[in-house]
Figure 1: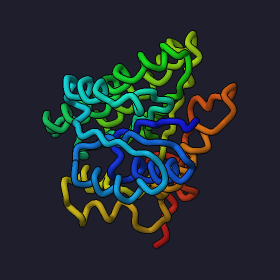
Figure 2: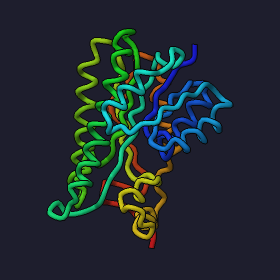
Figure 3: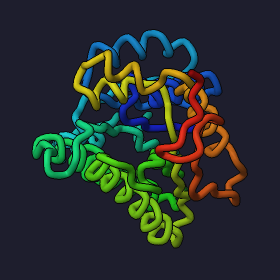
Figure 4: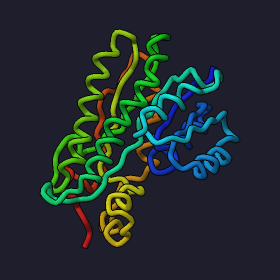
Length: 251
């Protein structure tokens, strides 16, 4: 029987690349995102491989998350894999200059949104005493860098939640793990710099960053290990990156 995976933040970057590799390998998908047009286009593109259902919601909206996931048709309600991928960075400011709105957005999406989605999905996994949760963290959840303050705090929270989830769900036989990327070339920097392409483009210049497909390959590897194998916590960086702030760039 084909497995079913729910992916948040599925319309771009790592989420989209993960959807691609999953459907190519026969995994049915529940694609979640805020942009219905992108969800429709992705379903049309990938639907030739396997069954796809889309859910249009913002992970920050608790009631919407619970209502949409609770309304899944029976053919998609048995979720085997949860990819908690939705997340954003907003701004890159010293703590005293930080925007309260940016802080709220990062905590609401990266922390509370992950918890809301997990709450909606985990009860089904607990009932059948099986399932696999992959939380997409960041190197920012392993080390704090200048002006990363609240974004790093939100990803440290993901790291703690991942560990807590693994401990609490162990009794039910549910696998829980995190994939923590370093520099990945996605829309991430454009969002962080609020559409300033000049600032965003500089982030990835002078070295070869990871691509979303690189992380998707790793996620697929993680979820296809024998069930007695759980990859609990994985940090992935491009070869040019030694830490959050140390990058070998070509002049």
